[in-house]
Length: 103
Length: 463
Image (cartoon, chains in turn green, orange):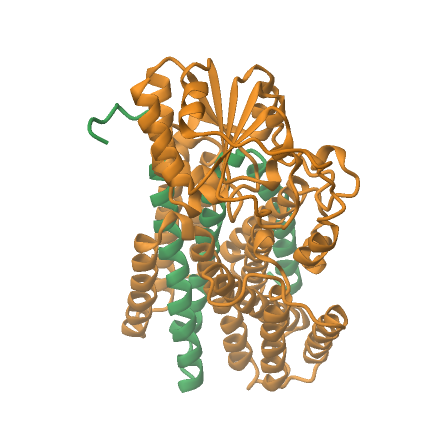
């Protein structure tokens, strides 16, 4: 596939993703907006994939190594922190606890 | 692994992310959705690991251990009240990673003359700029929310013009880079300028407007990641980044609507300043404030049919969520119908109050959104306002001179009686007078929210 054809496809999925994003997010109740924010935060942690490619695919000296390594550290903090904190929050949303004594 | 095989497996990841967001539409399925998303992320990481051919496995492992370890530790330790700054921090590091990737990609591509095509260069300049703005802006938002720096708006003359000029200069440098002057220092200048812009852009925004800023920065990071996908010709970055970009944009717009302010006004208005001048205009007609004892309020609550709690950020500051739930349970055991009315901007980020109450084991069906809560107030006996102020201020409905005029509020004054728990008569966060306190239906219970509710629990028990 020529470079330009690829670019057109990329722009197409970008635009479709915008509409899909609006569609899916508008169904999330205000009740869950904080977990939504931290959940989408975790999703943009996918940037770690790009960071891994920079660090892992290039062997052109120390500059790329340092940049790539830093990016991997930041990206992994984003991914792990985002998913863990979202899970912690969502775990707390319960319908009705069985009544606890002595609380 | 071929590029195509890799991108096909990335498609699996994309689907899990979409499912994760879909499952978030219901609290019962939301947690499973997040876990599905996490599995999808793991798939993407493993595929990428294989793609890199395993030649630099220990660097990858070390970097991920450091970053992941920090992320996991911080995410486990953080208090639910500190959630906004946690989200800001994780958001910032994502933006920083996107900016670094842009710098790395340009460095890799440049030695071979004429190789990077125009679209790749545009993508590199854009993700460098947006990523840097998001990184620096998020760090300032974090510092403000963590109270490392002053939360109040910081302004100086010519601020907007200076910020615009800086942003314009960054864009111009990016254009020069893309137009063919392929010098890495140009990108460094763009990234550095973006970082300075991020700082200057968030500094003047007051603490009360942070929910809007955080969701906007979330959108920025998403956008930077999506553009990064163009650099690396990677489908999963494009789609996931843009999903987040769309989500952040939509949330930002919803927040603006909930405060009846345009996004431009939030970002450039430095709200605190406006409010101070207008505070006096909102007259209180010399009404008197009625103060009540805990015993009186306890009687009102215990003999009510329906009580609605209206929590604000003051409740979280006083750490009184658990006490409120105890009081609610006690009232329910006496046959009172209890629910909570939550304003969309209660707390320091969208939906924050719901999380704080869920942490205190309040069952989520009792948490009512504004549109569901408002029609209920007319058949409510007592509305108990705990640490909320502006979101129940009737001036937002009737007083054209009020800075919050037009903001949708919780109509607690429709209830038979209103009880306001408040530390003192000092005006709230935005410094605006509240006529609700002078309403004949209203009684004030002064004191620390946690102690007041403790007293109420005692007194209701003895009834």
